[in-house]
Length: 276
Image (cartoon, rainbow, N blue to C red; front, side, top):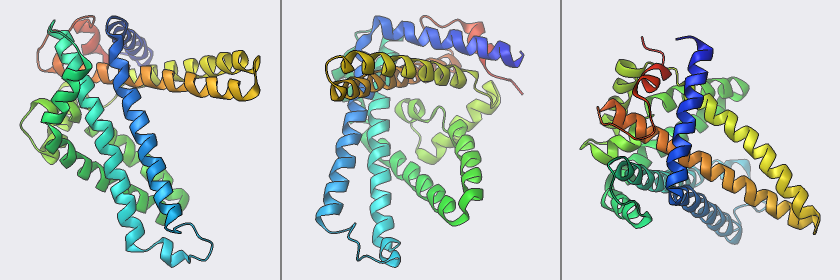
């Protein structure tokens, strides 16, 4: 299957994900809750740092690079990964309920994530550690580090593609989940994900259109109203695309395991990835 054929298939698969969201609009709530929670956490961290004088001008570079600083950064990474995975797992579970023809509720998704909170935290620790290591490499190697981080980050994204549904439904730990996810990608799908480009393109186009329209409409009232509406519009687009991507991952995971899923054509999914 050629490159442009994969992009075409990826676009169709992306549209199939949006069909699920069209029928179950409440699924968009999960990335919204995730984003709001992260904003609150970020705000809390900054308030705490300012109140303790962390950003005072008198602090030396050595103080900024102290073990305490890196510990705080690690905690920040872990908390953010925990929040993202918690709500993504809730969305994955609701998607599974939908594919099975069962009742889909936000409460059911949140309850499932609560039942898996231990493994979610374990994965957040692993992901946070990787994030810190990548950050350290980037800071120490400068521009070369950014290139290395980009390559490693891309490989890590491929390796962990199925991690959330795996830790949700398979009795494995974080490390085994990465191995299992990598194995699924290598054996069944290869390493080239055509749909990622499609989702990225859709988000880019919708973001520009939504922000422009909202800003223009709000500016008719007041410039600040335009900015506020543009931010809200961008938030909605981000939430919808994030939900669609998670639906896609859930659908592909269940498809890999031989489960039939609604709105997704088997042959189209098979052709989406480059097989080795």
